[in-house]
Amino acid sequence: MFMRLLIALSLVSLLAQEVISEGVSPSSSTLGSHLATRSASTVLKSEFSDIHDEIIKAREPLARACQENDEPSVVSTFEEFQKSFQTLANSCSKTYNQNRKSPSQFARGFIMILVEFQPLLESLQPHPALLRACFRATISPDVTCDPMLDSFRSSSHSINTMISFLKAGKVDLESEVHNAGAGLDLQLFAQCGFKINLSS
Image (cartoon, rainbow, N blue to C red; front, side):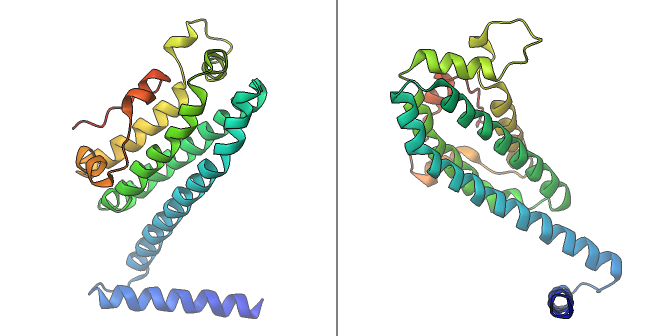
């Protein structure tokens, strides 16, 4: 217990020194705000890393599930990604509200997440029945509509929320895509029901 308290006090002391070195008076309100901003950015960075790992781990199992026509496994995989994208979108909004310069720090990571997500869609696309099953899974059972019109609605909404966060920070997303050089295929996303708008 004493050791944890000592570590916590050391971290606060280091952050206070950082604030002073930046020429900011270490008042309790300023230090609290600085700590909150750093905390939000740290959480967001961690969540980008988490979804990156989640995507990489899902590739082979999803490809196998598609080949075996394992609808429950396929649907479950994309339902989990809906939750992950929603969590990431919420953290993006929170971080931007605390630090207006934060979008530029995470633009490349966001583009790479989309690029890494593409192989999952490539595995799913050749299987229309599984694709339709994923469409249905994103629609409330209380809503009557054509599943093809509301495909991956929740994930699309979360991705576009993150795009809005980056645009608000004056990030040139088209340039980021070009600089990444990884071949983001927005047509593939559109064919799978994701409506993504990167243009300014």
